[in-house]
Length: 281
Image 1 (cartoon, rainbow, N blue to C red):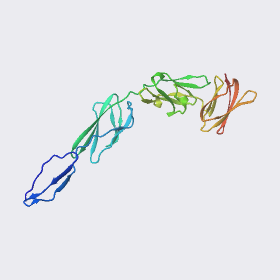
Image 2 (cartoon, one colour; image 1 turned 90 degrees about the vertical axis):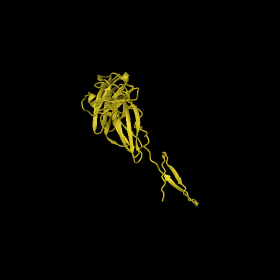
Image 3 (cartoon, rainbow, N blue to C red; image 1 turned 180 degrees about the horizontal axis):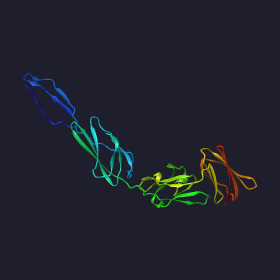
């Protein structure tokens, strides 16, 4: 029996080989042999958890890998970007450094390997904000302030490490009506954010009390409700006539009374009562 050998170079998409036998009597049935070929791994497409890469921040990088392919990650040597310890073949957390870096994904299978190369550039974070504390127009209260606000696009005040809700906490200054540590989260015009460490914040101290009342200008009262529930405030003149009654939310409450002169303010709530004589002008 004679064996015939066929040498060929397969394509990347495979194909079909047709074999037609022949002897002295003629041609036999055509034999079709399907060929499935393997190739080196395709290059991958990288997905990043954000569109803006800021310096000294951790982001998640991931791609959709193929079956029967082993992947490994490499960062360009000599740069300050680094792979975090916890990562999988198809995803990893990367700590960004300054400037640029090259990320290399190496895919290997039985046919060989391929390199997927990605270039990234990080953006500078905001500079460190400078904070100060001063007195304000409300008696016995303090105002915390960002002394270099022109460097920042946005400012968000935080109290003991937690963001303070409301528009009053997004200005360059904030009335610190509660004792504690105040910090800020700031952003620059490049879209990067910097959150101050609580150790770098500014501490404000007051007497520990549930309610406080402060008089200000233009008939404005500032009332602190230091409880977690709503309270009621009642404003009287010195003859005992009720002038204003308001429901107080937890936290700071600004009440515009349009009144002037000496007033008596009583606050009730959560089993506590408080009374204060104030002057508005």
